[in-house]
Length: 83
Length: 264
Image (cartoon, rainbow over all chains, first blue to last red; front, side):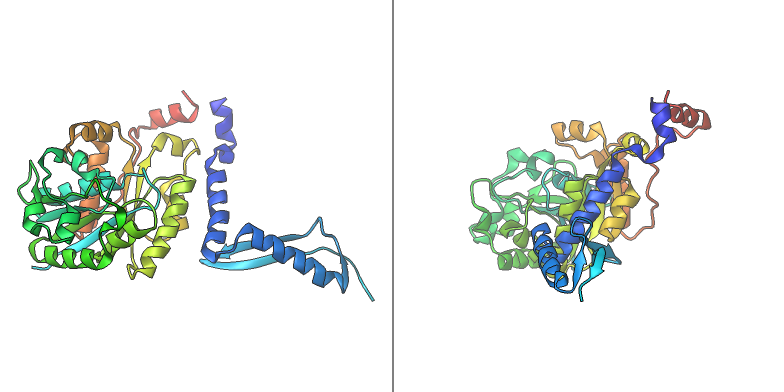
């Protein structure tokens, strides 16, 4: 089993550690809690819904980091534009 | 003579701050430097036992800061090195028994007598932390390759910078090469990438540390200890020498690598 697991490298738990750390540190550094992000997301939905019909379930709002800097990433699938 | 004061901190408890202070201090003394170790962890005194000096304490840090004794009276001379001293923390008092201004004043006095003042910072980010960093010229951040420890180290780095300690250096403690190899522990590069400060040293997990702490003799004195060797390298780097990070793998032969690769 050890041999097999070695063939599929990234199977160790370290990848999970690095990924979780990166995410938690983006929030720590920017002092943005997951709760604040959730509130922001709900308000975004309200505003955008005035103009567009959006897929709320498919919507992603998250903080990312690049070069020690936080960036807000929002991916909002649009079903149709209201006229 | 004007010495340098270095605070050793981590945020999270139990990552090896006190052990690091004891080993760096003893390592510097081994090189003939005049060193004083300052235990700022008031209420949870431990540096004395790690150094094996617990039986010699009369005065402590709080007594010095409250001017109930002279600095000289609170300096405990090490058993092994005559150029190494300890000022122990008070055991019975609260963390706010001392102020940052008092710590700064004490460090300024000690700087006249010693080449190095190594300050053992308590865990946490409250008053004890503020006291410990107040008199420091430089900072060392100790972490282990775990999510919680690295997260706290990141927080501490931010707080150090807010206290004008802009270039803290990193010690990654208790690396287990075997687990790193299996992909079950973050390696030096992972931790270093995330924290993005300069790397002062990497200490392998070593049972000798427990044995040396049992005896009250810092591992840096032990020629056979891997962690001791790693601490000697840290000390050399503090002294400005360019020492490469040592390889953490014990066996290098091709045969052993193949054996390991197929999981034997």
